Length: 473
Image (cartoon, rainbow, N blue to C red; front, side, top):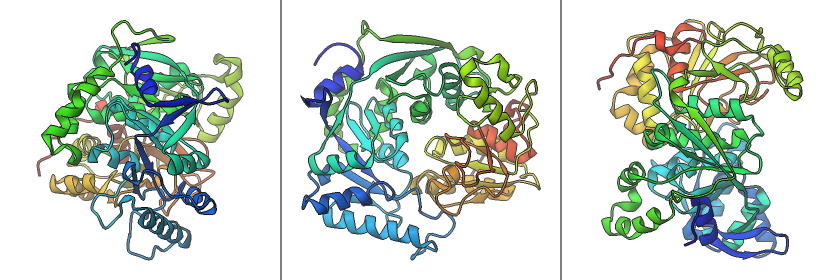
């Protein structure tokens, strides 16, 4: 095993050869597929009379188009039903494990992989979805890939990639009241920009990262791609191992003990060299919300919205357009910004701890009369656990709509969409114009507790002003 960063070690371990293009051909340890980006790739295989090379290293689910209100078949939307039927036929023919809605294991692809133990340290993981970087929270190298690459992985079990530089982002200190992992990554993107990570993978380190649970680490790695990075990861540690021991894959203790030495060996060395290092003081952070139409256009909840002319020249025109679209004024804060919709979901923030924290804000309160609010669990397992804990009852009593698992309003590929110029307090990861299904819709990104607070008050609200209540089942 070569010395250096985790990125170097795992990359070298999986490199099959260096291609004439200068790219490296990497063996893929886990290929996750879903209904939207895989049909064309399977079609390409059939045209060439090829079979899936490693069905045992492939796992499928349905998340983007699956309805979250009524999942009875056939789906109401013909396109959704067609995609679902095609995925079912493809995985059946290839012998690929499928977490379908009847299994109790269906959910967003970046939620089910970790919860089932498919996601492991030191693996190379790919999926036809940009937020595959989520899996880096476990010390994996996880990349989103395109349709032609999906075809290549299905056919050969390998993918061609260019090696990137490594930027270490050191986050030390302690997160204050109301501040979460989501605020850390929004602050990182705010400081470095949405293109600041181009050519890099991000290694997240420091005491504030180490103190996070796996869900928080996943939230941070999930949005690496929003900062332009090719991937993001956290070195595996005891927090990682405790999570893995509880998953399906490691119910056999011998399997766990067999792999742990490898996981330990791929951690970045103490003297590893990085191409760049960025430091952030967690003590200085407050809840972050976006004022514009990129995840990089964010501010602390008490900070003023910047005037475009105060920004670098190449960001001024984008800022002007964003402020016009969002209807915000420089010098104001985002506190008090009226919202019409509250969306608690997505592969960034729809895991059980996210719902628990939000429920502590919702308990004993009611959704504002002018707000439609929904909770969309990240998986059927999260959904079931939340129902058993009494979280569903808390949300529904407050006036939230409790949905089935799926991507939902994060990208609006199903019936869950903004209407007209509605403003949405969202726990998701992207806020570009039209992202949530309406070209006039307005999306404000924030952490789950902030979404809950906005749902209750009808406006963007500093969650630190709302006392939490313990939820009892």
